[in-house]
Amino acid sequence: MGEKKAAPPPPSLRRRRVKRSCPSCGPSEPGGEEKKGRGNPVSVQLFPPELVEHIISFLPVRDVVALGQTCHYFHQVCDAESVWRRICHRLSPRLREQGSGVRPWKRAAILNYTKGLYFQAFGGRRRCLSKSVAPQLAHGYRRFLPTKDHVFILDYAGTLFFLKNALVSSTLGQIQWKRACRYVVLCRGAKDFASDPRCDTVYRKYLYVLATREQPGVVGTTSSRACDCVEVYLQSSGQRVFKMTFHHSMSFKQIVLVGQETQRALLLLTEEGKIYSLVVNETQLDQPRSYTVQLALRKVSRCLPHLRVACMASNQSSTLYITDQGGVYFEVHTPGVYRDLFGTLQAFDPLDQQMPLALSLPAKILFCALGYNHLGLVDEFGRIFMQGNNRYGQLGTGDKMDRGEPTQVHYLQRPIALWCGLNHSLVLSQGSDFSKELLGCGCGAGGRLPGWPKGSASFVKLHIKVPLCACSLCSTRECLYMLSSHDIEHHPAYRDLPASKAVGTPEPSLGAGAPQDPGGVAWACEEYLSQIHNCPTLQDRMEKMKEIVGWMPLMAAQKDFFWEALDMLQRAAGGAGQGPPPPES
Image (cartoon, rainbow, N blue to C red; front, side, top):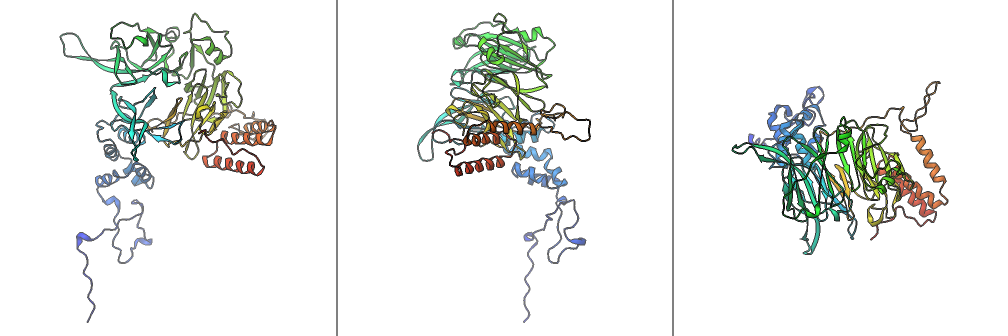
């Protein structure tokens, strides 16, 4: 009897084979011939584009980006706005408008995919990076501000969120105090917000919010006008206690505070680059009464009307302005801070504290950080300049000598963010492998420089894991915060430094082909060797070498390798040091 042949499966159960190679390429087999029994492969291009886009929209964002790099066809499909619209609706179902920009849906999807607020407490037994609660209504994270008890976050849609600390129950049934674990919407239509400019969050009792509100028009009509206003909220409860409204013809984009509680000055930056100020008494804000405050043009805009200010920074006793041309102007209101910043009181006028002082800088300044008595500036070439008091080594220059003028920190370039505190500084940088790391210098007391409790006069790598999309940071007495967000419309603005301006570049000789040192590498290495040579003992030289490794522009894995190798050599030589001291318990 002959063998029975198995019947073929019904058409509904047959599987169609799809080519795994690039759809724009030819057949996968040489000569275009397919092997027997495998059926005819089907190109992805034969599917309706809407079906392919619908399937791709269910992939994670990371996989969509990776798939778009495989071939030209998938690059076009994965870059389509229709795909990113579906992804955006999946990530943020309540988002109805895509926002602005050249690629609005892709920008909105990536903003919501990368948003996150991370923090690490300095005290306690557990010293690891934690993530706060993520508000579902938030359209990305634009900026944040920790206050005495809570954290406030502003998104790209103008919604200000109130992240509360609270007592919660753990998985083991224990009651724990957690940071930023609950959230509510504080207000909408916000443009910017500020609080007490001092580094200690204990003083941040009130939150000042610059917002846009609809105001009724002329009496007898139904029309309304959009007017800017400043609303003041209690940070402890989120209750609004004060509101001031401006004329509809004035439009502001930034607010900063300066001065003491009884004479709190609010500085408001207009869209045209002018600075206005008004003074309030914070100690009377919670009293239910109405009064008029006077809005006046600040002296920097009155005496220099041609200047167009792009952004502001402030602390309790000084204010810094950056113009649209990259110039920097300073207001210093107390003689002590003036002496710390400039090393002299020669030009200080106690009767005219608002007179702006111009800083002499070699290039256009992009952004800055202002501490109590020191500051940091970053120019268009990515160079970092520090100035002011250096008692704890917070300038990162390798010594503890004050600087009365901007001084370049040669071993750091192209930072993502810069932050200056009371007596320490932090820099968020990115390596050549796109990994991010956090560097710090100055006083390390209280755990504010994780891994370096004794502090450092130079920027060293801190023992903290940095999120991949971290873009800004802030440090308080109790905690270190990092904001994660990626905006595809915000491209790096750094330029390549011309060889003629590079530090350590030798002058070109008249002979043929003199070697160049555009990054000042040879000069820096000679300086490092000189510092090692000046150390009196072997142990001091080993510790100095560890610091130098932290300064060098190496990949994170390379730095870890050198630090571990130096630890092994130190132990072999009978040294007691074990690398950077562990954090205090």
